[in-house]
Image (cartoon, rainbow, N blue to C red; front, side, top):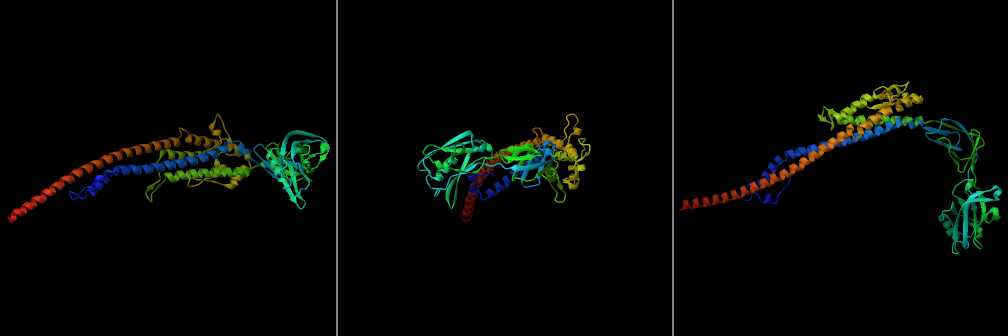
Length: 468
């Protein structure tokens, strides 16, 4: 409530408690404003609850959309009869059984220098050239694909040469191996595979200990590992790979070769019904979360005689009724199942949705028909649409620009703005009322002050007359 500095001196002349009088009058004047403030809180609560319902419906729509998609029903999972072969799959993998034998693992070339006293030993100045490519049979030839030059100064130690190689961008990495014999520089291909081999050469007078090129008869460094491709057979067919990860060697399937095997390993690929079951359960949980939220917001508690913030809200109640009707409807999408209850989705007394695991497992065993019940789509007959599509389309419409919930949110936002505008206007009017009351009581106080003075004077004169 607006205040004025003049009100602090009111009542001095008249003796009246003017402050209390004006405060009481303004409290009466503020009652309409109090009502608007209370209404503002209610509107804000309604806006918040509608927002929660929109969020819950959006989550439910996304899960329904997932069930409506054909890729969801293509999920597969792979298993291997041995740790020697790992398997992962995606939606393009075909279910079946595969026989895999690992003949050789992919490896990266590695060379090492002879031992130096320590990593701080100087190696000599010159240019080290690192060339990547492929060795011919018996390493009698080399076909290069890229080369990198590393300049080594007279002050460079074994450790600084390592750092320069690693900073050069060459397709190799360098490290130092230290043991009782001293420190050795180890250079290794970054990638496995025969095409990722390398050779090294040095300029005249340079650090010859780093040179390795068997095709030229230079073996100052020692090769500790050969660059080689992985080799395996899948269902009797030979395959090779530069790495131990065979990506899409079979559609949608990645095999990871971990060990050489003496016998074939059986790899099985099947539909990932556990992942599907989890999403179907999440769908039911999202529906229950949504309906419970709506029920709480629209209920009336007869005991406490209190109503939910959206009690009687036509848009929200209509949404609840529509969801219930859709859940209990039938579909001609599948020849085996017509209702959600046929595959284990059971409506509870409180409106929530539970899943009968036994019935759902049985439906998952008949995956093509279960897929139709959720993902079927018809352009001519809506009764043939699956439930995933039905709920996704419905929720998208409700949440759309002209949807029920969007319209309701916009309406509440406009109602809130009108309320706040009315409060501002009323605040201005109350300030004027208080200003007027202060002016009136200031004048009254001054007039009563004069009358009190006159009364005292007359009383004194009468007393004097009586004495005379």
